[in-house]
Amino acid sequence: MAKQLIKRDLFDQVMVPNYSPLDIIPIRGQGSKVWDQHEREYIDFAGGIAVSSLGHCHPKLVEVLKQQGEKIWHLSNVLTNEPALRLAKKLCQKTFAERVFFCNSGGEANEAAFKLARRYAYDHYGDHKHEIISFRQSFHGRTLFTVSVGGQPKYTEGFGPPIEGLTHLPFNDLKTLEQAISGRTCAVVMEPIQGEGGIIPATAAFAKGVRKLCDKHSALLIYDEVQSGAGRSGSLYAYMQMGVTPDILTTAKGIGGGFPFGAMLATQKVADSFIVGTHGSTYGGNPLGCSIAEAVLDIISSKKVLDGVKTKHNRLLKGLGKINNKHKIFDAIRGQGLLLGCVLNKKMQGKSRNVLNAALTQQLLVLVAGPNVIRLAPSLIIPNQDIDDGLEKFELALSEINL
Ligand SMILES: *Cc1c(COP(=O)(O)O)cnc(C)c1O
Figure 1: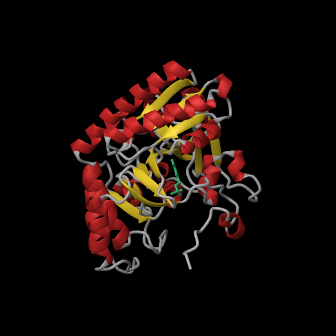
Figure 2 (figure 1 turned 180 degrees about the vertical axis):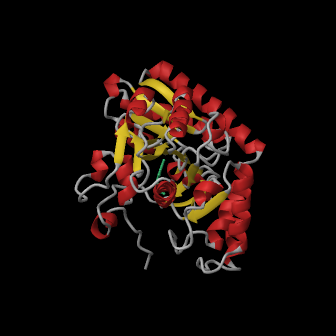
Figure 3 (figure 1 turned 60 degrees about the vertical axis):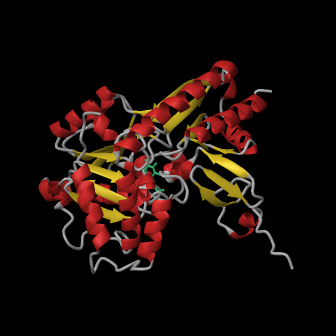
């Protein structure tokens, strides 16, 4: 009897309905291409939502996964392990960080960051200093604390009383922050480039102003670089191009290259507030995840890869600009490195999902960031040929939609 194909329909019969996946089911990937159950080939401009930073099945990552997989996977934090120590040392050498906490996702990294900020303020100033300021359209994860800090009503409604002590302000608006920040503020958290919110970079003046106001009010500055980090912006972390250094930084998505991984980086002074027993994670810092993240970090922090991100950015931008000249569909193409947002113009309002579906028909994977932005977050080492082929498919998709 022939093996029965597992169909997309099964999803609706057996899965919690919190997602609505596309119709195809990819079964393998290599570099910036994936293949579905019918051997149809797709160009991947989505990168698993800015996660597959080195594409699919990068030979070095596969090698490390296999090697470490035959040595030891998990120990728990009752013991430490060599990959975790090596990775932490490298992160400290390559960034502002002096201490590192490992976990398994962006939400967990932010949960740790927000708890640490509150605990640090509690230790040094007292209980009254627990307020966290964040910005509209921001996204920090789906745990109750992180989703509340993100503050988008569509994600927080119906989950009981909200977490207290949170304020949400307009992004890139220093005036309102100046009015809202106070001695009760323990931290201000921002994404240097808002991802889910529509690929909106912080202006240099805003970023510098936020740092100044934090210093003035003894509040910690937290950078959520879960999406913008791990080389995606063209530097190892986006803060490195901004002339601003945070006190805490969170990284996940791209740093694991597809393996679930997250980390919170901090200065020693701040980190010291997480004394034994204050926080933890069963899987965080396991040798399997750390060995893979170490291999990812080694590769993405090379000058070759980071320079490549910039030239690939230019190549994509040029191609998108050409397409837009012809089809007049975007008001702006914004973003940094290989995190780009194409902002749909008036006649296309609310139609990002239509574009995504049209691209899928052309065998191209793209992302949306809200109803009006097409988001591209391909592998940092996507071959130029795949960029060009993907752009061609994108143009075909747009001409279909334009009918
Ligand atoms: C994706 C994302 C998160 C959440 O990460 P998970 O791994 O899904 O928990 C947090 N912050 C930002 C900026 C993100 O893009």
